[in-house]
Every structure is written in C-alpha cells, then in structure tokens.
Image (tube, rainbow, N blue to C red; front, side, top):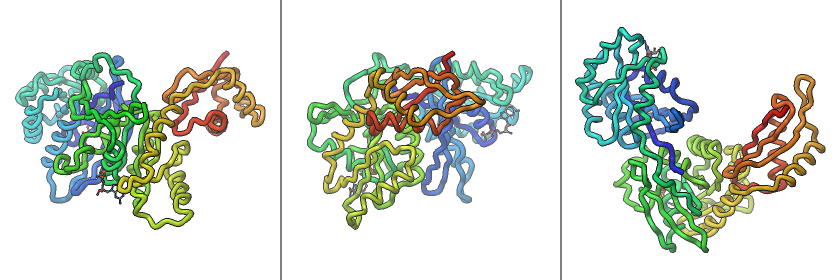
Length: 438
Ligand code: GDP
Ligand code: GDP
C-alpha cells in the first residue's frame, strides 16, 4: 500500500489557511518541533475527496524569534512545502489583494517542478470574482476563487488538488516482506541500529515508486524472512551534511509509519521518553501498527539488578497506550541484543496478522461475560450476541450487541484484556467495533 500523498498549504498569516484546513480535514495531529530559532506547531490532517486520501500540512504556525521577519518565515514555509509536499496549495487573500510577500512566495514556488495550485480565499460571493484577476500576475496559472468561511467552490479546489496527486502505485506491490519503520527523535541511534541490523546482510536499496520525494527503502533477508526498512535515506549514509537539519524528521516518521507493518520506536536510554516520542508513538498506535519499543544506548547506563525493570515501568506509564509492545534494551554500539531485533519484529508482525477461530473467539467472550457481566444503560443490560474477526493488521473484532450505547469503554477494555490473555496479540493494537443487531 502506498502512503498518503502530502498537500502543503502555504500563505501569509490571516489569509484563511486554518479556516480552509479545518473545512477540508478530518483528523488532526499536531506536532511541536523545536529547532534553533523557531518553534513551530505543525498541524497534519488527513483528508479525503472522492475516495482519494491525502495528508495536509499547515506550514504556518511558525512562531518567530524577535529578530526574524515575516518574509523569512514565509520563505521558510515555501521551502518546506517544496521539500515535503506532493502538491502545494498556495493561498492568497482576495480581500487585501496581492502583496509583496505573495510575489516573493510565488517566485520561490515557480521554481519547483511540483504542482502548485493558487487559491484566492475570501471571495465570498460571485460578485467578488473580479478580485482574482490581479493574481494572474503571480505566474502560477489560473487562480481558483474560494471562500473557506462560506464553503464556496471548495469542491472545485479539491478536484484540482486530487487531479495533481501522484497516481496510486501502478500494480501496488503486495509482498511477503515485513515492512518496518524505525522512528524516534534525532540522535537516539536510528541510523546506528539500521546499520547494525543490516550490517551482515545482503542489502538492496530501492526508490519508492510514485513518491516525488527521496524515500529510499532497504530490503534484506534474515533466516529466510524478508524485511524492508522504510525510508532509510539519510540513515544509511553517515554524513549529516546531506541532511543538515533534522527538521523534516517528524513528517518523514509519520509517512514511514503509514507504510509500515511494524514500528521500531527508538528511545534514548539516557534521555527517556519525550513528548515528541509520545506523539509519534501515539500516531503509530492509532494507525493500527505493530510496534517494538527499543531502548537504545543501554551501554551508557550504570545498571543494577532493577534498572531494566524501573525503565520498563517508566515506559509503561509514559506510553500507556502501548502496554502491548515488547521492550528491548539495545546498544547499537556494542551490538548488544541487536540480533534479537529481527526475531521480535517477526514475532509482532505475526501477532499483527493473526486470525483466531470464530468458535474459540465466541467461547472466550462468553466466558468473559459470565465472569464479569456487561453493564447496563437506560435500564437495558448489554448482551453480546456474536463476535467475529473480519480483519487483521491490526486484528479487528466486531461485537454484535443488543444496545451499542450500553457498551462502556471500560468494558471494552476488559474484553480486550481477555482476548490478549487468551491469544497473546503481543505488540499489536486491537480494534474492537461494537454494532447493534436488532
Ligand atoms: P490563517 O492565519 O491563514 O490560518 O488564517 P485564519 O484561517 O485564521 O483566518 C484569518 C481570518 O480570516 C479569520 O478572521 C477568518 O474568519 C477570516 N476568513 C477565513 N476565511 C475567510 C473567507 O473565506 N472569507 C472571509 N470573509 N473571511 C475569512
Ligand atoms: P539517529 O539520529 O537517530 O540516526 O542517531 P545516530 O545513529 O546517528 O546516533 C547518534 C549518536 O549516538 C552517534 O554519535 C552514535 O554513534 C551514537 N550511538 C548510537 N547508538 C548508540 C549506542 O547504542 N550506544 C552509544 N553509546 N552510542 C550510540
């Protein structure tokens, strides 16, 4: 499966980017990135139009250092969009008209080969349509008039966006490889782990079809199992000069997660779990990916008999939603336990892909409800008639019940725990869906 294409929204403050964003998007992921000079709160949102899915980034939200200028910030946005997006959506303001910074951005955007769409926002009624003509001067093709506030013409805009999205991978490669994303903050040791993992293996590097960015996957085989490490560009070569700043690391990680079956969530043993780790891990969990938590640089800690226990407890409380993930303490430097990684990846991938028999499944659920009877709502007691597992990756269960509203979150949690006690499902999230059946 291909990862979702990226649409970056660029434009001055106040042109209506967030309004537009909120009209089009479905699910919001906000990630704070710190880099020297700027803090940005980048917002990612999944969107869909006529069956085409894509992820939007709001490249705005950049907080300036006092000595920086708006123009600099906007140049920065435009460059970011050019580097990361498949389609760039440049928004200008039809009410204020064309400004110098619009021209500045257009100058930058004209020099990319990526598709750029120009939307003139705040064209609130048909009679404001003449507001768009001056924007032809930006040399970015036909301006598309929209009103984010009044939801006018957004369909035409989305048609134009969808038309420019990269085509779905011709003959999507469905393979028997286990797809692995190695994620985590800069300097936790991702590259070192990748190099240690593939050190002795025969490695093939491939470009990813259909993406305009430089995603490079690394394929290798260990003990007869095929693995592919997703987007290892900048990991396999050591020169940090080629990737001067890790400013794209977050979006790279999210895209790699989208394409993966298994996520290796790498944490620095010295620094522990950070906010950013939590967000990326949360994204992987929500996306239904299997995961292994890798605590790297284990060689750097003074250890006693309780160190790993205490560390595990800390991870369990910081990454509470990932109770199911195995934790491995590694050192990419000394190679301690690196050899265990492929085994564990293979193990959680199998759990992620596990199907259980319907009869045993229903037996487990009925035993569980006998021990701990379901809750009641509006005077009606919940009854679970039948449970089935229609899907894997992640294992997904549908519970047919009399009254879906009577299902409590805590009861679902109880049932999930029972499924885990019976079947394991280590390293994988489970999806439990409740359906009414009359
Ligand atoms: P951003 O800074 O580019 O994200 O802009 P916002 O989405 O925060 O919008 C800036 C202002 O423009 C807000 O007061 C919005 O209500 C207003 N605005 C956004 N879209 C429209 C529109 O289509 N028409 C009009 N008249 N105002 C709009
Ligand atoms: P990345 O940015 O996550 O890819 O991290 P790198 O693999 O580039 O590692 C960052 C630094 O940590 C480098 O100086 C590595 O040599 C060092 N490093 C990586 N793994 C380990 C480890 O297990 N132990 C120690 N002591 N240092 C490590």
